[in-house]
Length: 141
Image (cartoon, rainbow, N blue to C red; front, side, top):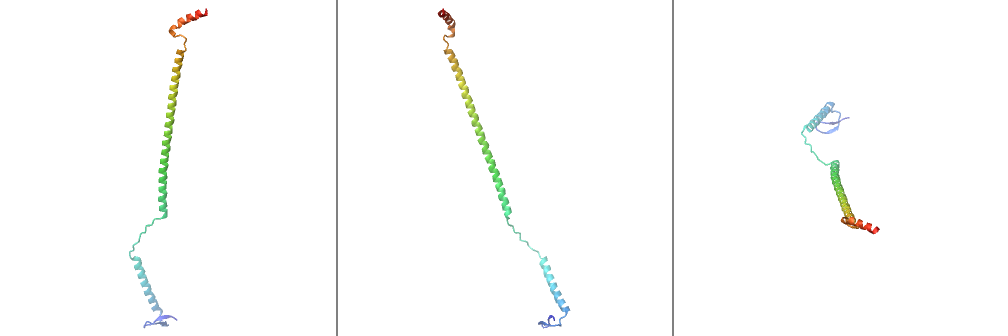
């Protein structure tokens, strides 16, 4: 038994519908479906470009910023350490120069005092030494 459509448009179980009519109906349906598909596929389409930021891009930018900031901070820290080292060396050199100047002035003062001491400690002035020798001989006798 087959389901059929008669000329009046009613459906029912009818054995009168032939395979040729069914093939014609199915062929028409196939043709209309093919035409619709062809029209749908051949029409111009617009593609909406959606830009979205990925978390990877944000993480890349953040990591790049951290690297730049770390480089700048490290460079400034190194520069400050070098400045401090230069200040320390300059202070040490100034102290060494001051100590050397004090030692030089102390040794000059000591030499001057030694010269004065030898001059003062003489019993007789140099000009009178011959007379002093004569007197020493007289006192010994």
